[in-house]
Length: 95
Image (cartoon, rainbow, N blue to C red; front, top):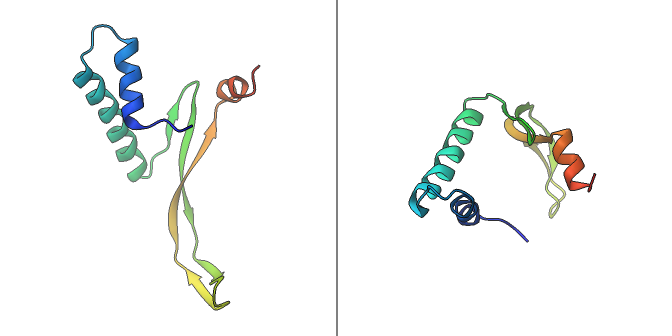
């Protein structure tokens, strides 16, 4: 099962009585916008009790086209990694 952005907005709406559905949606959108901006700038995003999103630089490297077997050079790029907090790990594992 996957959770969508609309599902998150609905959960925020359901758990916060003072918010309208539109406000709940705007809150989720605002959080995601801030998270994207932070990561785009190259900064890490730490959410206590949840985990840390890191931006890593990957160097260019040799690769292979699996269909043709041809060797190609993969460009340098930035990737986002996620490391869950100990609290989240324990909850996932039922501790």
